Image (cartoon, rainbow, N blue to C red; front, side, top):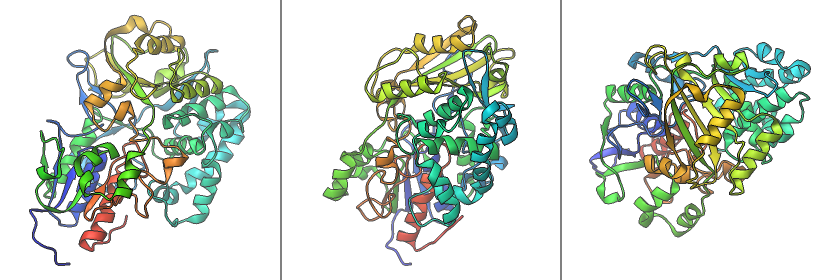
Length: 481
C-alpha cells in the first residue's frame, strides 16, 4: 500500500501495558513507531517506587497479575530474554474468615476444592471445564465482541459468566466457597448483584489454575522494563517528559493510537471527532475509585489463618453478605467501615522488595469516585481483624486517595483504575457503540487503553487489538495470534 510521506508510520500516546503492546505489534511489522510518555518514566500503572522508606519497593498501582501468563499476546513475547522473571507464590490467593478458617486459590483445582468441604464437587464441576477450555476461550474473552472462534466453549462459559456474582455464589452452601467467589468477583469494582460480575470471578479462578497469579521479581516496573527493552531492541523509540494535550504537538504519522481514557481523547483530538462520537464519549461512565496504602513492615503480616501467611494475595472482607454490602455502598456514594480490602504481600516471595528481614504490603479498598476521605484506619482495622498484631508491625505507610491516584496517573479518573465502569452497559460498548471499539470517528486515530475491550488488567490485549485494527485499516497488514 502506497501511503503519503509522514515523519512516522505510527505514534502511540501513553506507555502503559496497552500502549507498549500496541507499539510492539506495529513495530514487529517493520513500521516506524514512537511511544510518547508524559512522565519522566514509562509504565502507566506498571511502576515501582520507594514510597515509604529507602530499600522498600512498592508497586504504585498494578501489583497483582493473574492475566500476565494468560495473555494471548504477552505470552508470545520473549520478555524473559529482557530480564523479566516471574515468581510463584505458594498460594495464589486466600480469603480468611472470623473463625480462623480460609478459602484458598491453589494451583490445582483439587487442592482448592478440598478446602471447601461440602462444596468440593460443586467447585470442581464449575471450574474444571473452564480450565480445560481456557486456551480456546482466552482469545474470545480477552477481546471485542465478535463471532467466536470456538462458539461451544464460549457458550459454556457465557451461561455462567453473564450471571451476577451473587447468583453464582448461591450455588454453593459453605461460607468459605461463597466468600471465595465474592472476593474474586469484587475485583470488578461494582455491585456484585450486577449482571456479568460472575465473569471476573471465573476468569481469575481459571487463571489461577492454568498459569498462576505470578509476581514479577523487582516489582511491576519489571514488566514495563522488559516490554520497553524488547520494543527498542526491534527498532522502536520512546520519548518521555512530553505530556500531550493537543494533536499539534505530535509528529506527522499515518496512525495515532491513544492509551488514554475518553476524557483525555476528547481534550487532545475532540476537534477531529464527529459530533455523534463525541456525544458518546462525553457520556462514558467512570467507575468507583480506590483508596490505596503501601506499608513498610518489620515482619510478615501475622494472619490467624496459616494459609493467608503463604498467599501472594489476600481478600479481606469476610462473608459474601459483607462483601456485597461493601461493594454496593461505594456505588451509592457511601463509605463503609468494613470495606472489601484487596491486599498483596509480594515480599514473602520476592526478596528484592524490602531490606533483609523486613517486608512490604500493598492494599486498597473501593470508595466513591473522586473520594478524598482518609480510609487508613478503616483499612488497617480490617487487616487487624484477620491478623491481630498487624498494626504493631508497621514501620511506615504511604497513602493515595482517589484524587491523588488521578493526579499520579491521569487515566485513573476519580480513582477509577479500570478505565471506566465494567458493567453490562459498557462491557461491549466501551468506549462507544461502534463496529470496532478501537476506531474513533477520525481516520487514522485509534484508542487502545483499558477503556476498550477487554478492560483493566496487565494483559496488553486492548493495545494488541487496537494495533491489529490500525494495521489492517491503514497499512493493509493482517495479523493474528
